[in-house]
Length: 312
Image (cartoon, rainbow, N blue to C red):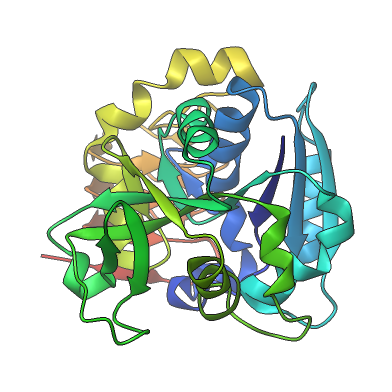
């Protein structure tokens, strides 16, 4: 089975970080977020991967190609004009072929078992299966309407009145039947492909109850690096075995001077922390320079700007 990763977005909600760093390469515990998906796919035996790219396309290709992903075949679908989730998938119809495939968003961190999802999908006999996640924030994020074991609506887009405590994770197993309903121009997959499957064969769902984090906004990005990190680090051994890297809080290639206090923080590669500095509950992206005596608390900092976020 092939996998298609949506990696072309601008990452608007992550600005100013994404002004200089592609959203798929924004690090979580010092590992690019996209690489967590590579690890889970490889572990599940899904080694043929297609990524659509647009924003910072050259940087994404270079970073991936200079990393060691032996055993994975990664193909790029470059979009000179961005096509959205629907148009981007439609563009790859020939690359994906005539068999079922996985669809994965690049701005999530999860420990989902792709093998279990694929088994569930095959047993259903349906042309599509969405991975859903139950959360009290569903009404804020966008609730999925379900009925009789099927997905019937997305945030009441179809006026069904159906609601649930579940959200769409950005992960699905899809039949090539979806291509009949997609548009070649800029479009979203929900109101084209997913709606088409709902009306033509049905759209099932698989409930994921493990780790799932959306890192598409600054505050959520900050929280993912600092909250429930044991769920992420629990994958360290498997991740290192699969792709030769693992999540960590302080890079071995960071330079930290004496008399510096660092607590509950992530320090990236190439960071230089001056003497007497205090860093608490913060994320410093690779290359940040902190002047001696500085205090950084509850913040995200990149090397191109000053403090990005401060929370109480």
